[in-house]
Image (cartoon, rainbow, N blue to C red):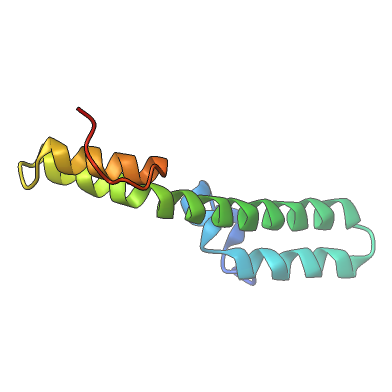
Length: 103
């Protein structure tokens, strides 16, 4: 018995697994749709792919926004920087443009 025609997509148990298998998801959706009698499963597979892509875009935007705050917090907590550095990063994140620590 053989398997793995879709790189064992059936064994993607969590988000970290399925995110790396988007090409396999697309192939699975196409194969299901080609059957002609599995349109519901094909459609739901396609919807899952759309959700994953939307999630990636939304997550990337938030990661970009938060990265400076996270870095400043990490450096402050590990005593590589000061609380003032964190406050400056937090102000930049909040978009006040001043970049000055709060009193």
